[in-house]
Image: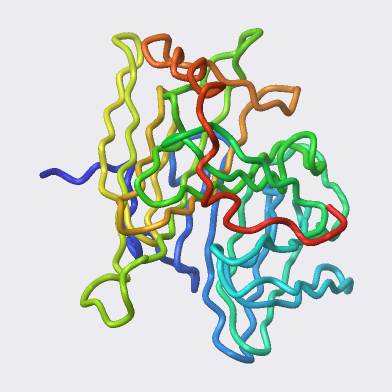
Length: 299
C-alpha cells in the first residue's frame, strides 16, 4: 500500500534533535505546528520560535522552561494516561530553552502568530476536564488551551482520551470553511496508546487505533490509517472521524489547531449522514470508565 503523506509514522518526521517536527511549511499549510522532544536526564535543548507561538506541554516527566531570562518549572506528569499537566506559553520571536533533571518527553503545540504575547504559566488546576459523548462514543477532553480556557493569538489545543473499544472524534465533522457554523482550522492529531493486557504479554505495548479523514467531490481527501504511539495524522480539510481505539488499548491524542480567521474560535459542522448520532446520547450513560482522571483540586 502506498504511503499517505498525511500519515507520519513515529520517527518519520524527526529532525534537528526533535522526535517529531511538523511545521506549516512541512505540512503544506499556513498555521498549525507540532514538535515533540525526548530529553535524557540532565539534558537541555534550545531553539527559536520564529513566527510561531507555542506551548511547552509535558507528555511525561517534568521540565524547566527559560525564555529571555524568565524561568518556569513544570511539574509535568508520569504519562498522558495518568494526569493533566501544567504547561508554559511561549510567544513568537522568542528563544526557548528546556531542560529536565530526571528526563522528560515534551510536546510543543504551535501556530504561526501575528502578536507576541507574554511568556506565562498554565496550571494543571486550571485545565477543564470535559466528558463528551455517551455509550461507545464516550471520551474525555482536557481543554487546556481552547478559546475559553487560555489566551493565545491563533493556537487551539486540547487532549482527548478514549477508553478501549470506543469511538471518538465522532460523529465525523469538519472545520475548513468560514461560515456561521464553521471555523477554518488546520489540525494535527498526535497519538499515544496504553495497553490493557496482562504484564508480560508479548507485543502488547505496541498499541493501535484507526483514524479516518474523507472529503467531498469539491475537495477530495482520503485517509484511513492504522495509527500507533508517536504517529501523527495531518488534517488540512475534510470530514474527520472516527478515531477508533482497539479493544486492547486506551487511546490518547493531542489535537493542535490554527487557521487564518480573525476570531479564535473552534466551530465545527457534522457530516449530516452521521450527525443524528448526537441525538441518541441523551438516552445513554457516559462510559463508567471515565474520567480516566480529573484535574487537581482548584480547577
